[in-house]
Length: 149
Image (cartoon, rainbow, N blue to C red; front, side, top):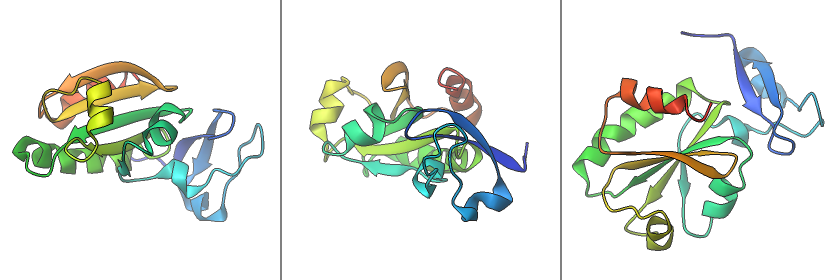
């Protein structure tokens, strides 16, 4: 379902703002606190997260985040990646998608007891609300997205 506007969560106050797609280039601001709704909050692709950036990118993010825990050698991870890229475009401004390479970031992977990959972690307001292990089809992943919307 294509819409002419997206919902952007303010990085400052967490308010939801409806922004017409044709006005995204005009540097929109939050209707409540007037903070900039920078393009960082409207990413239409997953952002790379490391042990050092995890706190700021995921736990401190006021909105919803889906964290893909993966490794480059993992075949099922490579199968899920295009699905997550597509979902990031479809849910831009509503859910932030992030990727954590578990081989390179073992501290964060250990913190969340990642034992199998791919594992998707669903965060809302910095709190882990759900997890999904394995390469599942787009429809199954979208069902889980409802837990963070």
